[in-house]
Structure formats: structure tokens, C-alpha cells
Length: 183
Image (tube, rainbow, N blue to C red; front, side):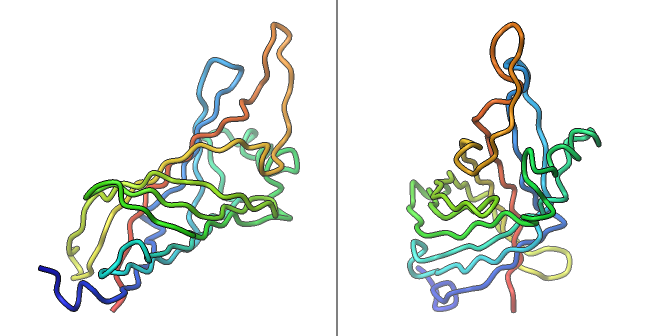
């Protein structure tokens, strides 16, 4: 049985210190390079009575890109890729949420990168909920999707002499989200 408290819309802030936005892309056609961005901010509004009406808005700090290689990170911040100076944030705003089963959802929303907005669909898995050591209600989610970077104006590439390209167009994205319920 659902209580009145669970049915109310609750606001949850993304805990940036315990969340991440990660990406993986093929390099030289054979290896995978991974990186991450810091999540700058985010808010979830969870509708306990009708979770399909829940929504999320979040932003990542583009300049925070970290692949573990300083020169590569500087190249990613440049206009060849993200142009972090001109476009300091990527944003996501949900537009629809569909239940797959008790722990999995499909969320559609508008992803904006480099002032280009496209609809993307994320597969979302609820990882759990509990009270932390400070008495705060926490919940965890992981969301995954795949995008074509060229759809967002991220077009730089180089040809490989033996055939192929330096960077694949397909980018896998994984969001690890920790959210804290607001009083």
C-alpha cells in the first residue's frame, strides 16, 4: 500500500560528489577510451503517485572532462570537440518516462551539447534507496545511452593510413547518479 507521503512529489538534488557522467568511444578503431565529466548540478522531481510524471534536469561542467591524459583533455576542451569556453555546460531535461519493470525505466529527454539539442533515450536502472549516516534519504540510479557525436556538431576526426578513423562517431554514455531527498 502506498502512503500519502510516498504519493507526493518529492524533490531530490543530485549529489555531485557521488555522481558521474562517463563516456566511452573507440580510438583508432580498436581500443576504447573512457572519460568523465563532473556533474555541476541536477534536480529530480519524483512523483510517487505516478512516476511517469517524474522529471529530471541536470548539467555537466564541460571543462571538467578527464580522460587521465592532460593533452587529450585539453584537445577535448578545444573547438575541435566541445569548445568548453564557448559552451561550458551540457544539459539534459527529461520529457518522458516509461516503466520497463520494477527497477528499470526508459527516460527520454533533450540533451544539449554545443547549442545543439537532440532527443535521446536513456535506459535507467534504480539501484536502491536508504538513509545515510546523516539521516538523509538517498537513492541511486544508473542510466545508459548511445549517441552519435556528429549529431551534436562534434565533427573532428582524422583518417588512419591503413583505413578507418581516429575517433568513432558512436559514444556510449553512462550516468551514475546519487540523489538526496530535500526536506
